[in-house]
Image (cartoon, rainbow, N blue to C red; front, side):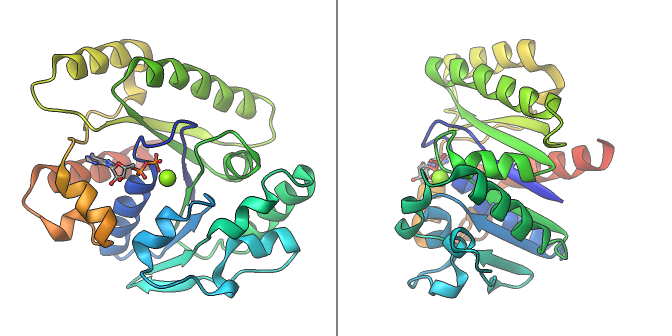
Length: 247
Ligand SMILES: Nc1ncnc2c1ncn2[C@@H]1O[C@H](COP(=O)(O)OP(=O)(O)O)[C@@H](O)[C@H]1O
Ligand SMILES: [Mg+2]
């Protein structure tokens, strides 16, 4: 099963969510592969504190070679990337899309593959959407984010309707929610109205611990397991697992 984390807006918490979900699946003894398709390489840095060896870089796919997953934790493998990926972003899109899809087919042995995408609707995001079973959209509390969200949900529906992919939107999660911020509650209510069951009940609070977690490469569920952010990620994970069992 492949899950893609996507939103063409940057800074909404895609990478942070991949980092935490992957860890939670692995803690549950699921075999997990995470793939970093963003040339910024933030996900790669979360899992790997040293430079990424070239043989573990997804950029190899664009040269018709096969990257090898590197084990970064128990039950958890990574195919990472770095800025070298950016040179392929605008090259021969069709060739690379096919290459990404057929390489992904060789990774079917994992229980869960989670793909992190760049903040754009470019080649790598489209490749990931075409090759995935489910999409999760993290969104933050802002007017622009809500507007962009409608476009993104529509793009996923169009892709699905085109029969090029069987991707389904698993859900939308509101991130960076400040307690006592009435705007956040209003936003949640607007989204609930618009997207109904697609909106996850759990929201992720804004927490300095989350920022520390990504910069230290330690999930907040380990850094501060009793904190609100850790509780929220665990709760969201449960919602995701139960939704996966019913779709
Ligand atoms: N709930 C949160 N509370 C505080 N900081 C957060 C939260 N979620 C993400 N961040 C921080 O915001 C920044 C952007 O998050 P990131 O996951 O990289 O977004 P994206 O991948 O969508 O660009 C990172 O520094 C991350 O640590
Ligand atoms: Mg990111």
